[in-house]
Amino acid sequence: MTTTAQPGRPPIVDRARWQAARDELLVREKAHTREGDAIAAARRRLPMVELDGTVEVTGPDGPVPFLALFDGRDELVVYKHMWHDGAGHHGQCAGCTTTAWHMKDAVYLNARGVSFAILTEGPWDEVASYVEFMGYTQPWYSVRDVDGPISEDMGSVTCFLRDGDRVFLTYSTTARGNEPVNGSLGLLDMTPYGRREAWEDNPEGWPDAPETDAPTGSRGGGICWYWSTDSEGNPTWGPTSRPVPQWTRPAATPVETRE
Image 1 (tube, rainbow, N blue to C red):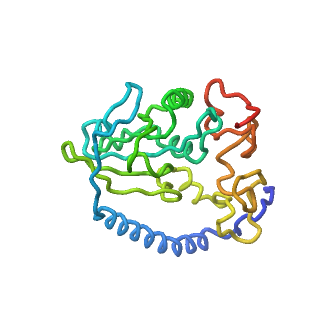
Image 2 (cartoon, one colour):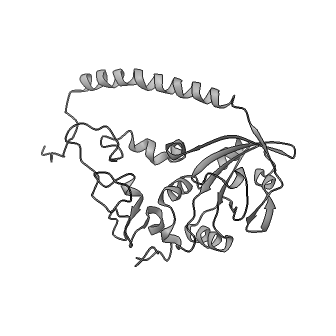
Image 3 (cartoon, rainbow, N blue to C red):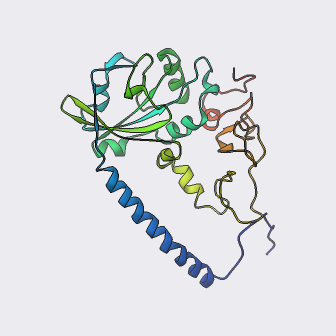
């Protein structure tokens, strides 16, 4: 049987040696899981801050009180989507797009008594057009001109608790803290080549990410090089790029500028 050698591929061993190495790693994985459980337990014991649930956000039916986002449930998870005014669909944040795309349906959260919504600072007319273009079904709301914790910290996952008409902020995380929403990242971490991002600790000879005009200064295409591509699927952060899932949308066409 002929095989083509791939750059930096893992060594080939028999099944017994593979199982021994797998069992050794499993010990660390289980410890990681238990530590994650302990952190989640500490998270559930964080204090909380009361907010004004009557503050109005704007959705498809106009202004509504923030309390309405709970949809009668006691808990609410919100993703705060960054927004670039006037940038068009193709110019919106690729990182926020990947998070929102992975959370297209909250049916399992709803079954557990948890509502889900996306907040963004964009003007509602632009936001509504973007939501329609992307085919999102989860509820979106604009917090344009809203002051306070509800509209702060864009690019974050934030949790709230309701007690009658009272609303409390319980938890918030951002950056890599958002990763539990992005199931693709967890799966990539299980693959031989991983995410192929510059910060990863890889064996010698592992393939680098493609070189792109990534906005971050780093080797091998930068951070999350695969989140944004041109119409041919080539990774790029340049003027002809879009966040990856946008190319599956009706009427998605190559663009000449992101401005």
